Image 1 (cartoon, rainbow, N blue to C red):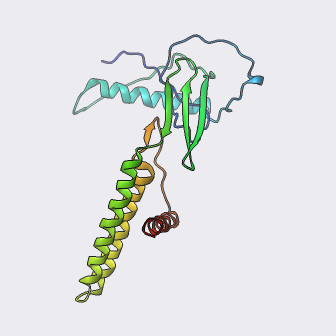
Image 2: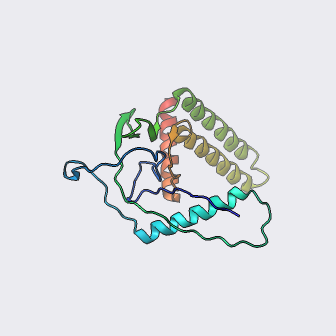
Image 3: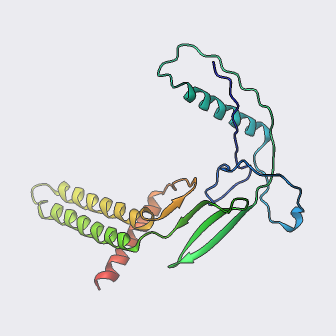
Length: 209
C-alpha cells in the first residue's frame, strides 16, 4: 500500500535553449509583483496537460518506491490536491567565447546555477582533433592500399575514416563542454553532417598548411 504526497513541477512556457524543464527549489515565499516591468515568458501549457503530466509522474515515483521486480496486480489512484501557476525569477546570462555563444541560468532566489553550457578544456579539444584526423586518415589510407583485391574495401575504409573523423569532431565541438541542466541532444540531418565534415576538412587543412 502506498500513501504518499508527491510534488511535481514543470515549466509552463517554451524554455528554448535554456536547459530548464522543472524547478529544483520548492521553498520560499510567494509575492505579488508588477510584471509590466519584468520580462516574462507566456504560458504554452494547458492546465489539463499539466495535471496529466503530474499524475504520470506520481504514478512513476509510486511504482519505483515499491522496489518490486514483479507486479501481478495493481490499483493506483492519483488525487491532485493543488495546482499553481506562478512566475519564478531566473537570471539568464549569455556570453561569447572564441566565437561561440554560451548560456547560463541562475536561480533568482537561491543564487545557484540551474543550467548552462561552459567552454571545455582546449587541450582535450586539440587532442580530439589531432587523434581523429590521424586515425581516420590512417584507416582511409589502409583501405585504399589494400583495395587492389576488392574495390569495396577502399570505400569501406574511406567511410570508416570519415565516420571516425566525424565522431572525434563531435567531441571536439561538444564532448569537452561543461553542461548542467536538462539539455536535449540535437539531432542532425545528413546535410548537416556533411556540412560539419567539410568544416572539419577545412580546419585540418589550415592546421597543416
